[in-house]
Length: 467
Image (cartoon, rainbow, N blue to C red; front, side):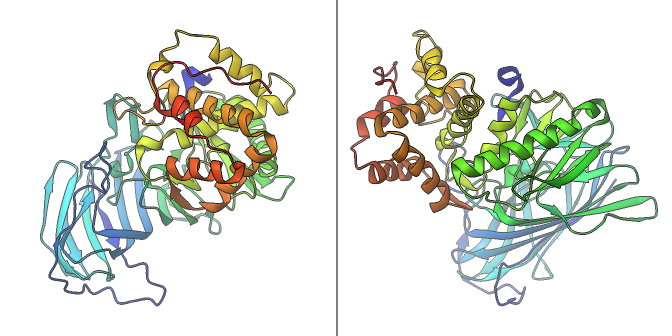
């Protein structure tokens, strides 16, 4: 995620299905259990996500008509109970729910705010399948202190879908928290002439029938819910490969047609370079989307970074593509650790500038450090504030933490730490404590004071020894 100002009546059926290697039955298993928690356990966001089950896969077969702003279709979610349950919750914002089934049988449910509680007896370890039928116009989150407007945003010709931090629930029910990653399949039907873009790779050519076109996308690597996208509209598209052989998908609104070749080429070149710095690319394709919706920010949607209503420069593109390693592949377990995403991606911008022969990372660090009155010194980035997640401190001071680490342990140890971090937690979740432990292990140094000053203490840390 980067802020641009800092950088520049339908029917939907949703089904939850078990993630079972043996193709287990979809019938629920009685468990004499208790109600699953209405939150996943994030103290700062107590109602985000849900307890008692783990999602393995979502299949979202959805139709969207820009003219009526109605979303419709069928989604399927594979889940497994992680405790004995008498009920479980789904996150869903808006819509009118008309029916719910578990294992193909009608199930009782209630709704309160963005929580939908489904009654079902499930034993720990049991896979289960739930279908939710609902309809209505998607309603994005608006006037949020964290981002303003996000989630499923209807536009004149389609939709702009960027859901960080908790906007996935504005277009499909599920476990809307980054701690529960899953794979996805998207079957997206739109009017002819409209392009539907989602994460992962296209499965064959789009199919047209009855004035509508269906696009099938598959993201076969685990993904957090806020990175899922269903961006639709009029787009110009270019595909190909990076020099290193990674498939590239670039799309721009016709308003930005002059940017298509540039977004394709720069995204390809930066992806290949990050492979040399961070290690193997964690996904099967790369690229970017430039939409005409003026969101005021860019988001690192997995395999498909999206730039909302502006022409992204190399710094922004380098930031969002670095997120494919840090934030997308290695994901946070709790929002308090957001610096692991944004600090890493911001430092990647500095590394890209250094690579291009412009300002060195040390010079960029010095520029930030020289401002002794910067508000970020009163915002320790190691614990992101729930009403101010995207504070500049999480970005800039988070990046400065990494540079201070680099200056302390040296380049060899630093880049070994970064590559091992990306490798050890590939397609998983991780915490600040795990990162600091790894840094000490690889460097052989005690780094508690360094991380304490830069991540957790108020005030400007002591100067570092320049490289």
